[in-house]
Length: 296
Length: 156
Image (cartoon, rainbow over all chains, first blue to last red; front, side, top):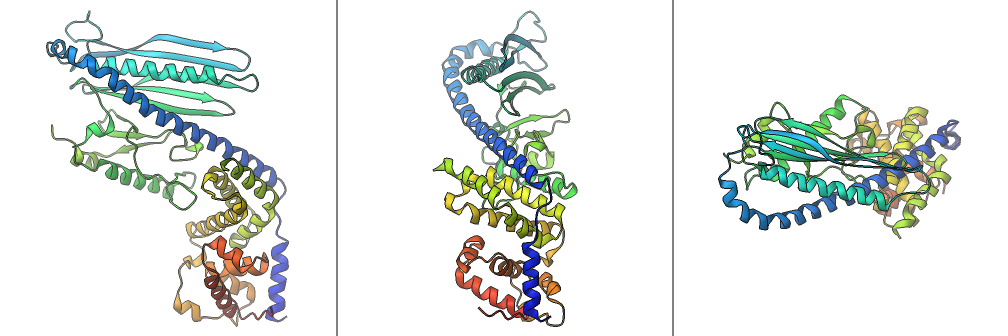
């Protein structure tokens, strides 16, 4: 058989390659899953952008109050060592044959270590309470607006104390929206008890520190390490023409400090990885964060 | 416009499923890996469908993703000789004394891709250039060089 005949035979064989039985059904599943995940990611973006807008509005509301309260605040004993606890102040429950909501609105109560009868002494806690309530009200508003007559729509909002140390108090609000499948996203509120302030990611670092690059590189490194160690782990790290990889930590990226005092960066579902990866968290070692932190 | 992309991709995935399967298969030569690659490609094509500029190019775009995923798979699994870049020493080599099947496997992955697309899938040089995002002349010279290495003369 000469080269050309051999080549044509290979072509024949190539054209006879056919998928196994059942593969086509699996493809259908994949197509549906991709569509759902895409829809969720879109919703995620909308929520995030809109989260920023809320924060900005909130800042505007608070500013006038701050001035009036300065004198008052000066008299106060620092909240250091103060006692923080979370109570549920309001519940929203709704249920019909297609829609179900189970929502709790939390409130941080603070008690000065020495004056246990005085509550709400922390300005930061009040700020968080207002912001959390507004955020949850909006989630409920969206749920009410999007109620369905067929299928299923659910909203579940819960809260949790993530960290409570001498320095940090972190409240986490978790929302799970359910349409065809569930989608979980969270918001973390971090209070620095020593300064009685609500802290965002950039507040942790010195003004001129390029913390974003440092955090991003460290997270990318950890993502790669995990993927190398385990085939089942997938992050959207690659940056090619059709995959949007993880490029940078967002300004309002969720974070908290764990019990060891290390910074933990948190992502929502579908933010940097497929839904199977859940809400990924990355512990940033002190060697990375310390050189960037503001001297205090 | 944005709305039409996803249906166009899904339609292509459904009607050209066999083609995408064959394309991936010729890189990895087994059903399980092929299925993984095709599924991953389908997922990415839909998930990132807004990156497709023109719904008319849905097929081209999916082909590109399938090839990209196949090569990535080979690279991850330490196969395919990682001959992604041009190697001049290699370019001189021919595989006259080994059978054609082996010679195909020894080809740099990009050379193999143009052979498969041109002769097995009967695509035009223009289509191949679109898929690989290269210009037609580059594809053409790559094709003839690859044929030379295989010692195959095809009268066209």
